[in-house]
Image (cartoon, rainbow, N blue to C red):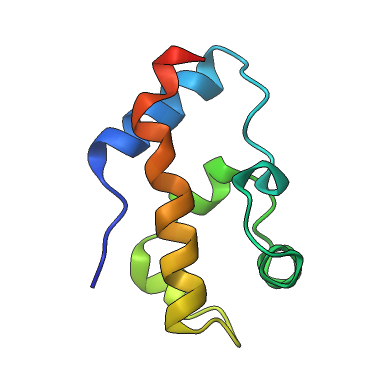
Length: 84
């Protein structure tokens, strides 16, 4: 099972603290259907997403393995958020 890396969580937390505007889910670049699914389950920001465990995200109704991997790939770009 893939996990959100500590590096990504740290980078996201730092950017949130510095008021970067890259933290609405729409900016992750995932399909609208996936965004709607997350929104319907109370996940509206990247910070809310990474505050959940991988198990909690995978328990979102109608979220499949492919969609979970899309989320993980999209979050992986935040390893270099210091460059924003």
